[in-house]
Image (cartoon, rainbow, N blue to C red; front, side):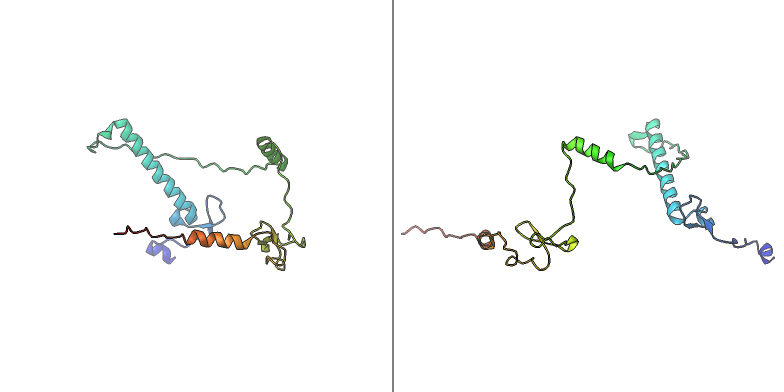
Length: 172
């Protein structure tokens, strides 16, 4: 009753769902849309206005740059189509991949330690020899690593510290 006297509207009975059926709640301030859908709609309208103004400038021939010609703007309603996700069978995916490469890729099993064949998954340790090892065999002395650490270290030191030779002075 007080609302009739003051001219204010009564608050809605319950929450209003977004008109785009995205699952969030909308408000009358955003045309019964959630904030994300409202922002997207406003962005599309701005892009449509820019496109219409650029088309209008091309039609009017106002590329001369004086800017005195009127720009024709029109409201463009862009329908939003909901796209249904398609289900693609795994056989058709493998068929298309095998046709392109020539031979199918072998299925990779779980990652295992190269020494004890224990399953390591994401916690496996990569060695410089190129193999994967568990926590027990991760050190080079535990799995008889064929990688030559000494030569690799010598090469790294030689590359980091080049030999500097002074020029010989001419004797007077």
